[in-house]
Length: 343
Length: 215
Image (tube, rainbow over all chains, first blue to last red; front, side, top):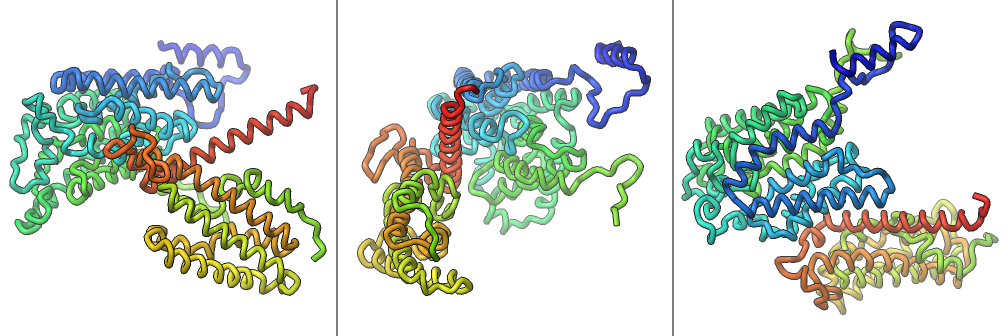
């Protein structure tokens, strides 16, 4: 038998009444700690990191090291300033730093990565009161800050490093999709990840491996990625049915097929690793489905019509802002039917 | 109206830091966020507010015996609107590009609650000298807030201060564009407000410790 049951038995044996009554929520497994969840995420990110090393080499290592280090330093500095025990041990800052690093281009200068890391933890998390209090996904706050500030180093042209050659010197699939004359890469390379993009987003296969592990471990809720991917697939399918040649000429990104939408850009990485941050999500299952569907909708909208080729970051931030509202809309019915209103 | 409020000196000092309109009272935040992308518009705005605040306080203080309670807000607004129109037209005549850059924010001083609150709190109840001291104190406090926010935003966003290059690291492509845009205004104001609260808390704790040696 596991340890938690033994401790539970020990408590009930000591106490006089056999039936212990306590209000929800009930801890059913004492091993389910923040640290274990974060370790799960780090483990799930292993194939993604591996793929990024294959694609981008030392540049990827540099960016990820800088973002992770700056996140850890700011987290520790915040703990010292607020005179509370160090929170590096729960690994949440390390996860934020790593996901932030994986969402940046390989050509990102070290100081941009550092500023993004400092803003991610400093403004995205500590300013709200630390882990569990933040309204927005910290990694995406840091990335959005850097993206708006240093568009020259994080915009679409920055992704092409001409002097390296190979994959890294090509335009990213979603940038190509915006150019009516350009051809979108084939599906198989996009699935395996041998295309250009942010450090961690290129390989759908690696992201799926890690993401399915997270869902199987219930560290990530399966409702969110399925909401994101399902909604985007639905919208992309409808677009393909309804779109005309004239509208493709006006908005070239509308020509992306369902599978091209699903395999390009940061979609799968975002759906499994970014949108599933439990702090910034709705609580109930229905709420998480609504949240995922909203992310999918905004990704489709931003990819098709915004000034940026990809929209995962802004989609997640927008839906983070709506999460409290979704919580209010989707209060689950308690066992035994709805509570009758008092007259 | 024989009310003995704070003296002129107290009014002046209180307006600058202890009752700072932005950092303590959180008044007039809309123009504070809008005009602080750089030092020059912030200075112009601070000057316009100083002019309007002093003139409105003097006039309201002079006619305070004639005010009818149910009509006082109307009188305040008309008084302020007069001086705001003068300030706005003067800016348009002599600083045309700055007037263009500030857009609606100079005319909007009419509804700026900093000024109407000073009419209500001080000049409609106290003499001209106190009202003038109060106006200068509050206007300096407002200027302090505007200029502190604008300093951070201009140096980080453009690498300049009063259009003079001071920070080579944040110029051109290296400037933090987000600081010039509206999110930067909210971030900088929030962080400076937090810093100010933190300083105040420490000072309050220091005073408490000094007055209670046993604790």
